[in-house]
Amino acid sequence: MKVINARLRGRTGLFTIECVQGKFSAISLQEGLIHTVDNEQIIDAKQSLLMAPFVEPHIHLDYVLTAGEPEWNMTGTLFEGIERWGQRKAWVQKSQTDQIQDTKRRAREAVQMLASHGIQYVRTHADTTDPNMIGMQALLEIKDEVKDLMDIQIVAFPQEGIESFANGRALLERAVQMGADVVGGIPHFEYTRDKGVESVKYLVTLAEKYDKLIDVHCDETDDPNSRFLEVLADEVLQRGMGERTTASHTTAMGSYDNAYCFKLFRLLKESKINFISCPTESIHLQGRYDTYPKRRGLTRVPEIDAAGMNICFAQDSIRDPWYPMGNGNIMRILDAGLHICHMLGYQDLSRCLDFISINGAKTLNVLDQYGVEIDKPANFIILDAKNDYEALANQSKALLSVRHGKIIMERTPETACVLSE
Ligand code: FE2
Image (cartoon, rainbow, N blue to C red; front, top):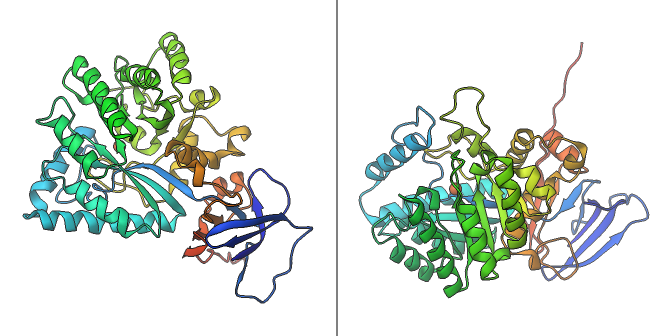
């Protein structure tokens, strides 16, 4: 495969990219525009941006596409979401086989949505507070089924707690033994502060025992006293596991006072942990107990980024009981995130795609195989834009997605003809 007339991020000029046996074999600067040759083997990027695929680092594929079944979340709150999810579990199916089929059908549909938007790396959570492990079983099968479209990491995620749910520890370990790639947790949801701390220590120990990555739903609340992030960061720092660890959400950081946060940042930087913010989900679910002014309910994205730590954006949900919107398009999340976080200065706009590409890849610990570089897997997308700013401003879509040198998605550019009298 050969692509001509491509722009690359951070470089000037037009490039020819060649792929052999599923890997990038040559990346060369052109002397100028190459006029299209009539050769089906050559793809003309038409001066658009060619880049590594988008990354979706935090989604719940076991929950997707369930909004309104059987009833809609009318208040939009997290707690009504939990109630509606319980309703659906009772409503949907009887047998375990039916439940697995139902989960696979919805996950498969969501995978198509993600793939159609140029995403090739996904980290999904699977609820382990289910003795039948429906989500785990279904997503393990989906992971294998769609491996030609994307790499999926599965997080063993104890939605209802580790210490506060019957057999929570054993269920989490079972999920890891079944094949989870990442160990999760939800310390702020545990019944007491002590149980939250214990849950963090347990999940880090489990990850160390089985040599797994870590991704914790951490401090997803507006409560300024929810301080499990410091526990997680300290624990992984002591064990040298920081770069393999992610703190998702950390929305309480948006409510911490500056004096505490200043002290906390020293630990966070030293620990080298990664951060994920889910801006659309958080602004929807947080700030619910405020009158006015209402907090935005997001973590300190620009401050974490400016401090040199790694942070990326994620979707979290696609039309589930907690969040009724979403279509797999992570560009929409980037747009919302940058608005909410006061990050529309040109210095951020000009590199904004980092937050849905390389920063996500770093979080997933896949940098060894990620990027448009010789000898790396020929995984890339061509965006309908010339650079980051244009991509964001136009909400540009991926026109082409290539994986291991093979086209897996093609889109016809949208055109509109405005008529004037
Ligand atoms: Fe989540």
